[in-house]
Amino acid sequence: MSLLKVINCWKLFGGLKALQNVNFEADQGILGIIGPNGAGKTTLFNVITGVYKPDKGKVFLKNRDITGLSPHTIRRLGISRTFQIPRPFINETVFENVLAAGFFGRVDKVSKKELIEETEKILEFVGLIDKRDEEASSLNIHQRKLLEIARGLITKPILLLVDEIASGLTPAEVDNVVSLIKKVNEKGIGVIWIEHVMRAIMKAAERIIVLDYGKIISEGSPEKVAKDPLVIRAYLGEEIA
Ligand SMILES: Nc1ncnc2c1ncn2[C@@H]1O[C@H](COP(=O)(O)OP(=O)(O)OP(=O)(O)O)[C@@H](O)[C@H]1O
Ligand SMILES: [Mg+2]
Image (cartoon, rainbow, N blue to C red; front, top):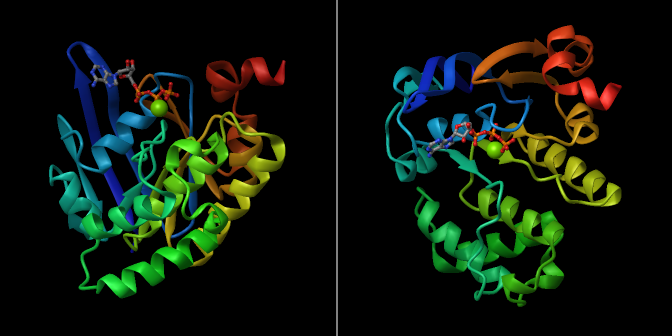
């Protein structure tokens, strides 16, 4: 059974077709999504997470129709996301940021004590335990991206949607987030990862979907999509040239 199924999804903004008949399935692995700016990648996450209702089409999580449910309900059913622009509560500490995400997003009955312990474990896991008591405003970009992941993980998702965590990072930081996402996936959490940094997504993803003008123009292994003339023309051209 696939974890997520997106069937014939359309999303229009006035006359702009942000998503056009998007169809794909994701399993428990790491699925990459690439494509030019404005291709509809973040819109796709917004449709999956209930921020937008698709104009047409359906979204299924483990065969359950979640189309049009509220973001809150969808999070409780097991989908977490990170944001392209990190959105921490900047005046709260790193610890408080993760704890708050747990309070609001958890579906299971968990005591405050247990949640505190889990928050500590997750901060350890993502590599932010040393920053535990610092205000989120003091974090650099890399640390803010790690905090996004921690906030995503505290709700115990079965699927984590990651929106561009590698951009703006140094090569060593990119390697760090690649291995972190792989570690997340090894815990049994499915991952869909939107990324412009090719070095990162080519290393991490088992399969990649390429969006262009709201349509899937290519799909397959990283090696396959990197060689696809359509993808080279629409997106990779400059890089390869
Ligand atoms: N709320 C909105 N209202 C109107 N147009 C929107 C809205 N959200 C997105 N769009 C438009 O839809 C298209 C797809 O945007 P989206 O943010 O999904 O692109 P993206 O692939 O994530 O791009 P990037 O790589 O730059 O993040 C763009 O043309 C964008 O301007
Ligand atoms: Mg985007």
